[in-house]
Image (tube, rainbow, N blue to C red):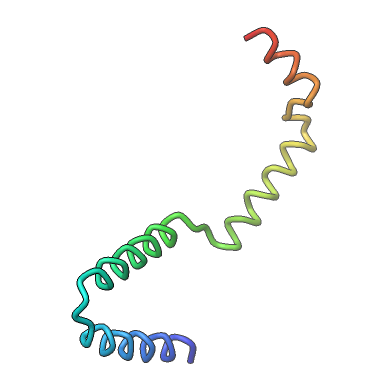
Length: 78
């Protein structure tokens, strides 16, 4: 159902875009679409996000981390 609504919205948007003759508006819209597409490429799924959280928690449980104090001490040696 949601997919059908998205398809209908895209078709309606295309019809409206066909009416635009303002070059600067077209350029602005192209930039917005390009930005949106780049954002989609870098997003991860909720499942992946949760897996990464679980992995990070497991690393902490195994002691695989550095404390703030230890990090500060290491940074002084740089």
